[in-house]
Length: 423
Image (cartoon, rainbow, N blue to C red):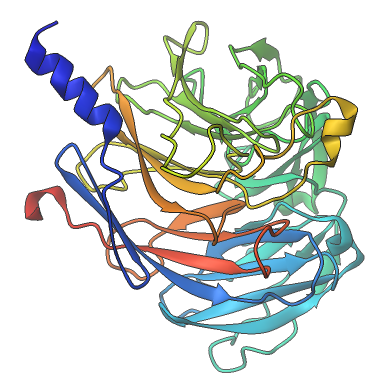
């Protein structure tokens, strides 16, 4: 390898965490691309004072053209929607209460009753958008019980009828629910005793036959067509974390990462310390795979080595150069009690959580260089991607689960990165 190539690789690895900071804004330069993100608070503190926060779907609930969000709290057994007025102003409104919210994490936004309004599903309950929220934002949302819920809830058109369905996974069984058939439940199959695996986008066409399949740790389920009948279970090369804090768990995203026409699997370990991020290359109709480990983010001066739980995962063109990048945020969570059970702590003691982008080199054989845009509070748990402010790029909304800072909070990260052609 030439000196020039060695130097280029070394420069990419170091990738400038050069974080030029001014109030509320983080900028990082990497391989000629300038990432710039501005942080805004949606709510700090959230209602309640104890751990457990569900959500955080994005949708235009009030019909004003931008994206709002939803957060539920276990302690208050209440779901809230946050109406975006501008980047810095989000107004909290109570949606309603439900017993299922005392044990909830996952959530999804979709039009369940086919009335043209976006509803919200959480654990064992879905809230019906009452309409007219632009004029009457405090109108209660009718609550409807249903059988599904748990750690992961995903909206996807499983049966190809043109309407979004609900897919859930918690522990062992993957199920899907058909809103067009009165929330009819179909059990897809079983995995090992996992903590989670299908969120935020672990439903997609892996075998190239045109219908969505479902991925969990170590296995993927083949849609038999229209979601009906037996779903064959196939293996894929998932790599678990030994002695994981809460057992094997991952965040997943099915996407054609390298542009070869076949959907791949991007996943991050989560709910455990010493998590990592991978992309698993689909070498043809999900029959053969190649797993690629992404480099862990570099350790900043004064921090401790290691990684936390990468519970936030997303794939998009974050640096606006035309290829797909990967985001993962480390969880804000102080749990260490599981070490008495010979398991890993949720974090190496003293490690500050980070928001990390792995920027793609592009092409059929992409490499991914980690760029840290933020360290320490506000931390991350679940994150949802969307063009919140309608400016044509992908932003991030996030919330935490178990605080290691002073308060429970939800946050908006606005993408201010210029297009590649404008840099």
